[in-house]
Image (cartoon, rainbow over all chains, first blue to last red; front, side, top):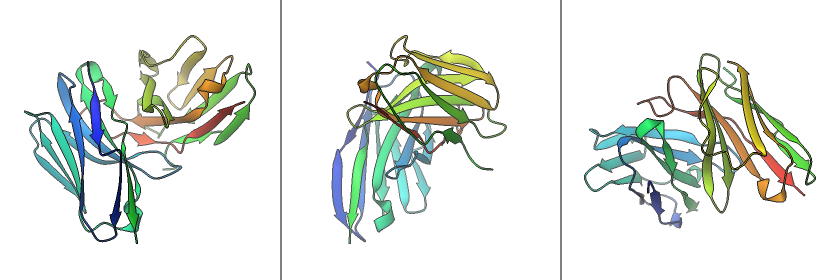
Length: 111
Length: 117
């Protein structure tokens, strides 16, 4: 069964600290993997898109990694800011353009 | 560009009533998606269109739900009759190319918050 699991479900960190969010998937075949940021009351916004051959991709203070062998991805946030408080959703694109969504990690950055 | 436009932003209706949600994709995008988001189930893909043709409607929960895309600039999601368990935020998104095409970034609208009493 195609699944995407994210951990932790929720996380609280102090402003300025780093954190890492995890995404494990069982989707096969694999096309690409995306991380989205969703602010409260708004639609998701794409952070990164990674293909099978890409191990690391950065977008400012956000760095995503992908290990296609172990079917794991992580999103690392460096020097967190209050504006990073949001839900982060991992999406895996499988065969036949099938999108499989994780349930997200809710991050709260505290001052 | 104004981005993906959805209307209404909020809808409150009574059980049994018909609800119609509307979406205008970004000009030039040829794929359009309808999603539903709840606390319990997260984000779920309901249906997506490519070049106005439904490609994958396996996420449509039941016959009470229907979606149309009469032209490249407009789509509707209709629920008839509505039920309390349909209460959720419904998002529309658009992209160029196919759903999962590499680097085909999806752009989401602001969503419609539906409450069925």
